[in-house]
Length: 524
Image (cartoon, rainbow, N blue to C red; front, side, top):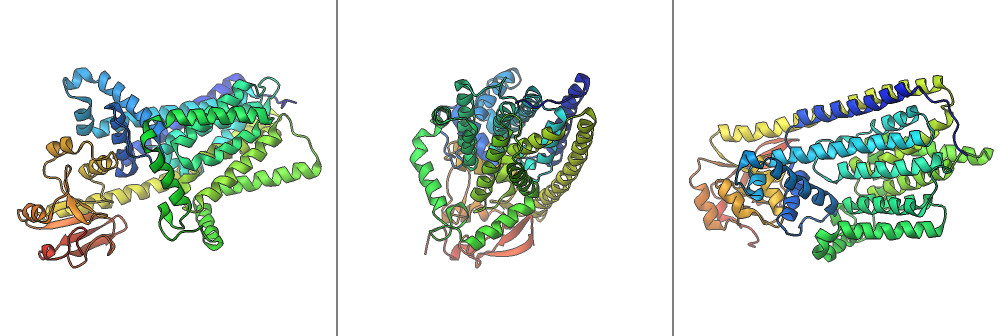
């Protein structure tokens, strides 16, 4: 049974499509304009690991694993370099990327944004093909963008933008079949499409593992097996660049899963129920609309079951799968509560709300009211995003001010993790790429020095400085000051530095004259 509704005039449909596209582009431009630079972790890491693939090497940064993103970045780098060839002449692709990283990251950012916009419009198109009004899709998208998490899909070179687009495509494929299973049946090709998209998302970032539950939307075991095989083959293809790091990658995931702390830190074991509950509360504070939406979906499923009211098409099953996917994601992410880790299920928040609105939009007047509600929610979401962005801008400005004051005092600036410094960003990206571009970067930035908190040693681009080299380098300077995140005793000897200024955006330490007399690096 298909949902039967009176649709808005075709011109209104087109207007809504245009409004969604224009709103997205305006938001993307504003965020790009406000943030400006990109971050060392993970933006520069993904850029330089993409460059690794371009020059024929396997990427070293496979933590997420993120290989589809690196493959896509490699293609974008190659095309951008070829298109701009007349402007840069005989520059090698490696040298040009290392000298103009922001230019290439803006190109990647533009492609990512275009992909997200295409996925949004695909989702809307699937809703309309299923017979639901465009107003239902607009409400679903508006609820999704009231979240704090979508801020991480704009102006970022990381898995979330690509993962968001992939999950939107998956949600659109489910929505179309759920609303109109007669005209969009679950054929073998349909099962394979779901599997391919799920495999892509899973290799983009392992936090998307709950999307595997979307296979339960399929009618029978045979269809699910076809989807699972397609997902495995898809994942295998996208993991090809990292095949030599596969053991390292799996071992890392097992380590994280079997330890209580973040990123695999802390004692062995699983998170306690108390910590899990506290972490879920943290997630609720950052992504309340996700929790409220899944609660609404559960209530509606319970109500439909009690009333024994049949729903059109496969809407009931789609809602049930949506709940399973979101709840599984919350439980997975609760160990390390970051609201943006919920990005893979935001399209399912949109899917569930879209399906519910489609059930009660049986007139043009109702559709108009829902469109008004979508506009109101979008405005609220924009205001939330604007406030968060202003906080980010203040943070960045303070970080830059700390570094500028170091230079104004005539001191050598030694940026380390947490300092938004262009040269340190390249250093961090190079470090995650296995230090492959160290010699090229050292020629381009010969005066750069940083502090490696894990090694407890100073470094430049191409090697670690021993005590004698570091003394010789710093003896030429009036003073030496380090800028980055607050350091712990396991990262530096506090007999060697004196804090000058501390803020939420960074800490400045003065390197004391007697530092060579203290243990250096791994010395006891």
